[in-house]
Image 1: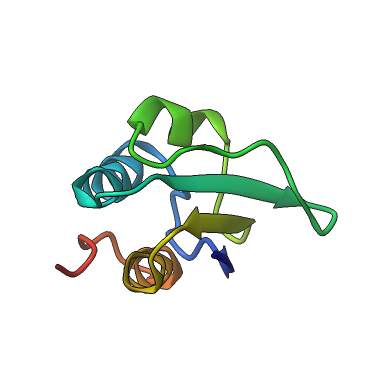
Image 2: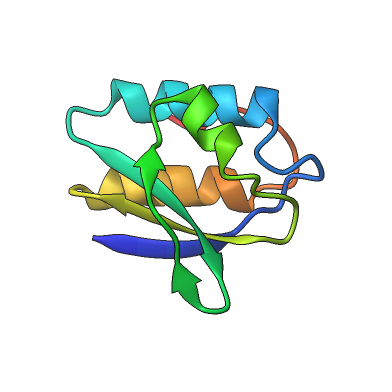
Length: 92
């Protein structure tokens, strides 16, 4: 399953948001991936459970990303986190 969302955090996927996202993705049983969307096309996906991989995307405020996971619930949780303007943690 895929879901596209826009990064709302003013700092994009910098250290703290990337860390919180990676922690939530790592707690999920299956693989969760994230890819930056450029000109309507998703780029190479990275492991969403890796802080360094997430930060390597260079996803900034306002950028579109595509989440991929095998579970609708984790997609929803992570999408809501990415679309939230403050840096809270994903709900569990």
